Length: 393
Image (cartoon, rainbow, N blue to C red; front, side, top):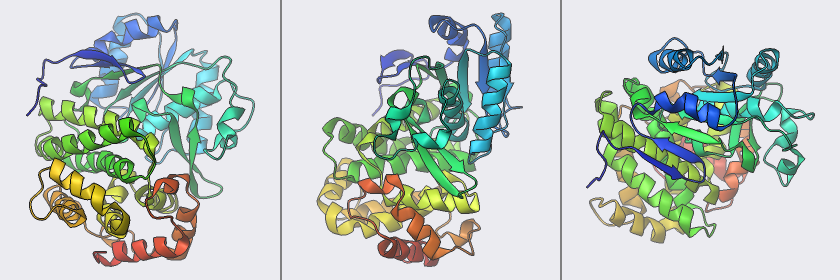
């Protein structure tokens, strides 16, 4: 059942001001004016810069007579060096607003660039540890308009960026409540034609957010409700979005799902992300694909303490068989087959993993704090072994 049509448009606060609907990219000039800016810097990634979402956005700005800069030197796993380079372009161009355009990589880099424009401390001082976020000077932050072109990370509604610290070979979560974009434009037309492989991998990233947020033991009933319904939307629409890149309704539903579960993840994440972050930092693998591969092994590991919740989840999703964790794992495995997602880490090219190092890094990753079972290097190594061997836990 759905109440959404391709012609649906809506505005809402989540709490970011969201403009949702096809062709709403045309409202970008008005959004820039609303924030009192005149000279935006569009930040995107290397793979997107010559494709229709970017060319269309730049044309909208040109037609409106808005002088805009463009920065695209962002890697799939954005680095501190990418942020520094973007910051230099922003300052030299006299830009007063950042338009974050793209998937999670571009959005995360763009938000970090905007944050750092008015800071005197280095980026790494704002790592999501304790109250480090209080170190941010919020007196004159550069505003951000976020425009997602994939449905996965939900970074367009998030309060953090994940940036690779190259010198330390680790992913760092940079956090501040005001990193949340000022305005988000969710235009599903900008996601049309995304290759099936990327649609699947980014959609599985959204699913990981929803499952981990739902399973996290933190008490946050509003976030739990968002996670539950976001997972349902992924179940109903990700296969359609992957099968047909021109399906505007499926693309719309996945954008909504991605945003919902991103808001939900403030309830907590877990071992999927705690392991995906070091694997991504050390081996430069795609974050969504890592989450997709790790997902069933982590769910199986958490079985002893999530069974009651996953009975409710499997019933809500109307999964076949006996309700519970096994029904959810069976569905994940079937979904991965339908989306052509490999079953093990070696199948995605990770054939020589430093198991102990990844497990040790995962044990101190801040995302692991929301896992239903407390994490340590030993139990993370067990999950890694299962994901390497394809052995169900």
